[in-house]
Length: 70
Image (tube, rainbow, N blue to C red; front, side, top):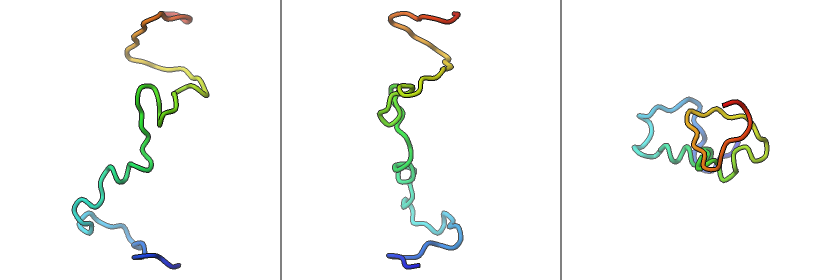
């Protein structure tokens, strides 16, 4: 198989074989890590497509809570 640049290593690399700072958490996470913020994951509202139950340690309500047993 042809490669542009160097062929992949046949064995796992150790940290001693890598230049300082060449591999960072941000570089590893950027293409795959989701952004979870304000009830969304990557901008999609949690539960908007498929509603589900939730378990909470703290619940603050500003307009009321309906249904169920409290």
